[in-house]
Image (cartoon, rainbow, N blue to C red):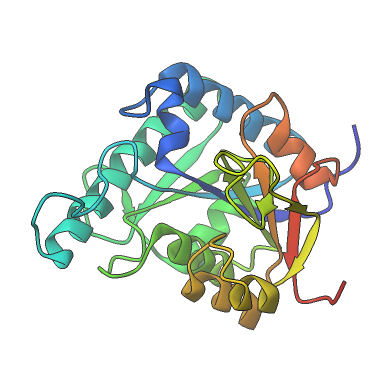
Amino acid sequence: MNEPKYKRVMLKLSGESLAGTSGYGIDFNVAKRIAEEIKDLIDMGVEVGAVIGAGNIWRGREGSGMDRVTADNMGMLATCINALALQNSLEDLGIETRVQSAIEMREIAEPFIRRRAVRHLEKGRVVIFAAGSGNPYFTTDTAAALRAAEIDAECILLAKKVDGVYDMDPNIHPEAIKYDKLTYRQVIEQDLKVMDITAITLCKDNDIPIIVFGLDGEGNIVKAITGESNGTIIDGNDI
């Protein structure tokens, strides 16, 4: 196995990744597999922060008629459920974790405090950042980019259902072409929908590379950090 290319990373998982094939709820076999791969990173000496979406529980105001703020607040609470599920799976493997929430809920999570988060990482604990940024109108992609900048993460590992960034949706267009390398500017100008523009801009401004890879397949998280992944790298360097 190759050596990790980064010492401290932010792992961004979609909520759907925890749902497995059902597409809804939490598949604890999937959560266990993800936890085992995170443990592999910890065993390699990598410091890991994580942000999880909520799409397996709540899809915002789609079809609900709710106002945006209420729907987003519900989504932030749903990320806390996912964070606790991942925490449980990690601790079953003997990995120390902390959940830090952007919304105060002292009985189940610490408040987000940057210096405390960094200290946990230095001690080898996985820090799971819940409740997004604590603000409506901002996605968990933006929360991942923001927290990555705050904790001085060296890259974002962006786990997807597909194995990289394509010029079109490969599930609809079999002729879609996959990119091995992109710049932040290309992602924005071509509107490639990797992350939302706010998140991409945060990564660009703070020079945080993004490694986009497919979560399905054993060992893909480790491959992403060791450079063995066949995913897509996004950074500020021209091709």
